[in-house]
Image (cartoon, rainbow, N blue to C red; front, side, top):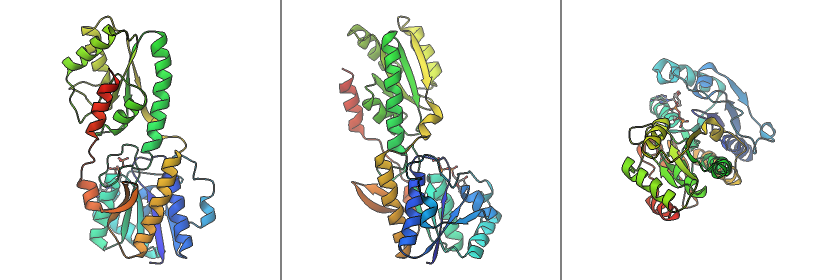
Length: 324
Ligand code: ATP
C-alpha cells in the first residue's frame, strides 16, 4: 500500500478532526502518501480529493466538526455511483481507504470492499456510541460532557422556580448518552429506549420525589418515542396526572454534536488513527478499529454493523439508587 484515502461520512462528531490528523501523520510517519476525500462518499464519486501532508493538519486536534466535511450520498448506494468512486480512486493511485463514520458509512465501505476488493478500515465516529466492538465512539465522551454542562445550567433555573424539567438528549435508538449524562448530572429519572419504565412507575416516582421534599427535578429523556409518547406528549401526560408540577421541556439538539473534543476523544482519535493505518499496512482489511477495555482492537466490519452495543444495565440500578 502506497497511498491511503481518508474520509468522514454520516453525522459529524467531535474528534473526527483529531482522527484525520492521526491518519495523515501516521501515513507520513510510514512514508506513504495520504489523500483527503471531501464530503464523504459523495466527494469520492466527484473526485474531490486533496493531498495531505503532516503540516496540512496543523491546529485541528482541538476543533469540532470535520475539515473534510461530511455528507450523506444517495449516489454511493448505487452500483454506478460506486463505480465512479472506484475509478477516481484508481486514477488518483489510492489503494486503501480509512472511513470515519457510523454504521451506515461502514456498510458503504463493506459493499465497496465486496465489489472491488478494495482494502477498507473503519473508525467509529458518532456521538451516539451505538456501535458494536468499541466501548467508546469518537465524540461520545465530548457529547456527554456537553450534555452534563447543559443540564447543570438547567438545574439552576429548575431549582429557582421549583420546576420539573424534561431534557431531551440525542442518541438515536441508543440510551448511552441519556443514561450516562443523566447519572452524571443527577437526573431524577432517565428514560431510554432500551428500558420501558412504564408511565405508572414514572408518575409514582415523581410523586414520591415530591413527597420526599424535592422541589425541582430533572428527567433526562433519550430522543424518539418513550412509552409511545414524544417528550412533549410525556410532559402533557404528567401535567394532566400531577397538576402540582410545573413542567418545562428542553430539547438540547445539535449543540450536542459540536464543540472542541474532550481530551479523551483526542487521545482515542489519535490511537485509532494509528491502528487503522498500521492495520492496512499489515494487509488487514474490512475491520473497524475500536477500544475495548482500554485496548485498541479490531472487529470485523460486518460484526460492527450488525452487532448491538448493549447499555450497561448496572448503570440503571445505580441511577435508581441515586434518585433515592
Ligand atoms: P450516523 O451514525 O451519524 O448516522 P452513518 O455513517 O450511520 O452516521 P448514514 O447516513 O447511515 O450515516 O451513512 C452514510 C453514508 O454511507 C450514506 O449516505 C451512504 O452514502 C453510505 N451508505 C450507507 N448504507 C449504504 C449501503 N447499503 N450501500 C452503500 N452505501 C451506503
